[in-house]
Length: 145
Image (tube, rainbow, N blue to C red):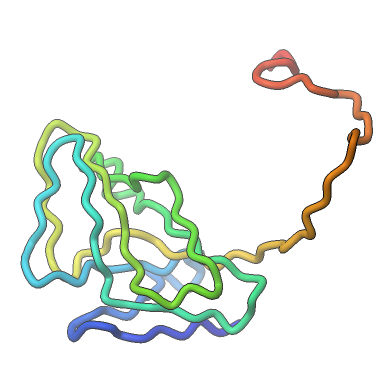
């Protein structure tokens, strides 16, 4: 599989793997000036990049960087971001500051991980009933664990 990137802004950093076997590619901020995220606030941080997977059955997942979350309380505002294979706009990362201290994002700072994930594209069908299972409608603690 090939994932092609286009730099939309001068100075945009192409994603890289921290190690040869890293699942995620590190995404970096592409900023004209530093952005301070106040405590419990959300900021949309640009990367200056657009991406194009060479397959339609791929999604790009944006995930938090563990170092930013554990050391500074910086996470993804939406938990996990999903980028569809046909999206060609700029990749922007919604960061949330879950700490009580301001956090400053600087140009070139690694802010998220990008992971290519296969995705099924099912046909949506409607039915009057669904097949029975042992679990049935039991949810939210119904298995006793």
